[in-house]
Amino acid sequence: MVSTSRWIGLLWGFALFLNTAYAAAPPLTPLFYQVELQGKTAWILGSFHVGKANFYPLPPPIMRAFQQSSALVLEADVRDPKISQWVAQYGMQPAEADAPTRKLLDAYCQPLGICQQLAQFSPWLQSIQISMLRFTQMGLSPQFGVEQQLLTLNGARPLLELESTRSQLAMLSSFDMDIQWAMVRDSIEAPDTDIQALVDAWRRGDEATIAKLMRQQLETEGGYQMLDKMLWQRNRQMAERLQQLLAQQSQPLFVAVGSGHLAGDRSLLQYLRQAGANIRNCWQQPCDISAN
Image (tube, rainbow, N blue to C red; front, side, top):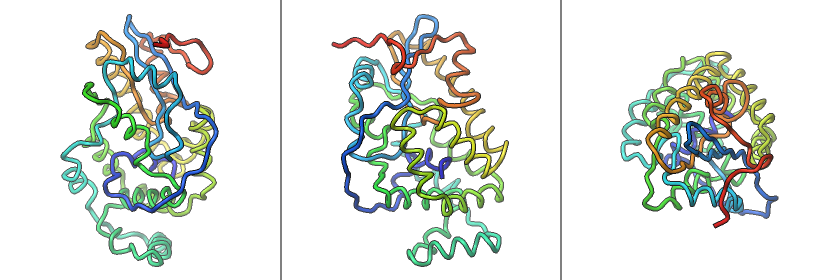
């Protein structure tokens, strides 16, 4: 469930929505860093791709940095007009499940009346649809995901990408069927407490817990291959891309990426440090954010 949550922002238009009520919640302190590299500055926020209305507004230091930045940088532009085309290309490849997975999937989808709908999708996309349904049942919606909220506030400023929608979907579809069906099983079997633990860790900016949850989940679903392709390779590539964007910009950038990319071994931040960046956790160290 943890691993599939990061893809919800890409596919929110294909989700199954339920009405939810939002209760009061404690203050947010999500992962938030100032990165300085070769005289250039970027603010990096660890995002969550679904959320609740009471997550907003984001804390004042984050909003000040966002308002003062010259461009918004996301993993991918979720408004890509070709997203339906890419989903059709990479996500509409039905496959036959093994008997235990079929039994588990039928037991889940038949009471909800969604078996026929799910069957038209590739297994990895089935896992995302199931995860989305479970998120919405817990009151979490992509409408209130961090990226979607930032896009709403971004105005006419440039939107830059660290990856692309197409590359992300192609990567998901590249996993073998054993791993994709493991994703489906996990999306059904993961307890609600695991989902809530990830939400809580994001809210308080608990890097160690985020890293632990991400690693456990990815290793369960696909071992080293999943960790390498879903996190480590992409972290290195995103760090390289961010360095390119910083070199091209004279003013600070505001970057929002899934919090899992900022936690644990071989994180985006570690690759930036290896490139010579000075990085400060803005909840633990003073960051240069003007109050104006």
